[in-house]
Image 1 (cartoon, each protein chain N blue to C red):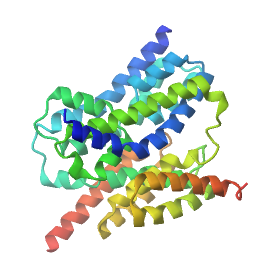
Image 2: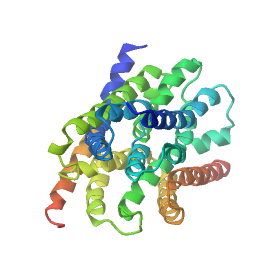
Image 3: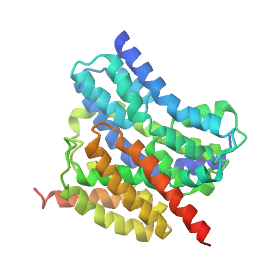
Image 4: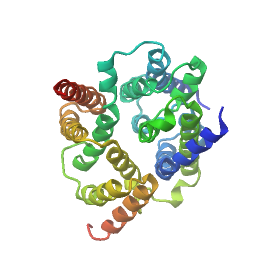
Length: 106
Length: 228
């Protein structure tokens, strides 16, 4: 194992661990104001939207460009998830739809 | 450690495993191409365990960039976990710092979102979260080592693999939306994430959107409560 790679991995590990660890370790010991709790309640929606929407509207070079393959696959998954709310079934459906669409979109 | 909770957590990780195995394999393949050994690939997935930043690191390594800029980039890419860790802190009281150390080390976008899809299972149940996250990381490590070893046999852009994790995120997002104001926050977050990603290249959009949209959510909810 090469030393620079080891330093790299340890460095990445430490800077990734700290933002994961510090809030959980210390906020649990403090009283959090009601308003802040209200805001934290929206973090899952905010973060998930910030992950999902750019996938549909950015290309691999991080430029704005509608991604028809992703967009057309997302619609049935969205509707299915709305009705069934099953995570693993949504994943399987999404993969099948994406795979199937690949034959038409090329 | 509560065995029953742990097992529930393991089961809840199934959809994440479906996504992590192929994406982990893709990482293993690319990391080998960039010159990492299989052992180094496994070690990175064990000690860093953060998908996006691992892919970025591989990209930078293959361009010959030294460790320091890569660590700085990793820090900024993973700063978004501050928000998730803060949110999770609401669901745990009276635990040891050691427990939080273990739980927080394995926090990812996916495990956070699955945990938040049913908060009653998480509230003061660290064993559940541990089972969920342990299983997820095992899948990530297994995928990356598998990719490093046998990568040449599989093309990770084939089949439905590129859409596995997006499907998971879409379903997780839908599960979060129970009220009209949630839908508003989703629309605001969606538009602002596209704007931020366009305006600030790099990986600021998740953090900025998280702060902005949750702030707006708070204002909407506070106004709604005042009206009643």
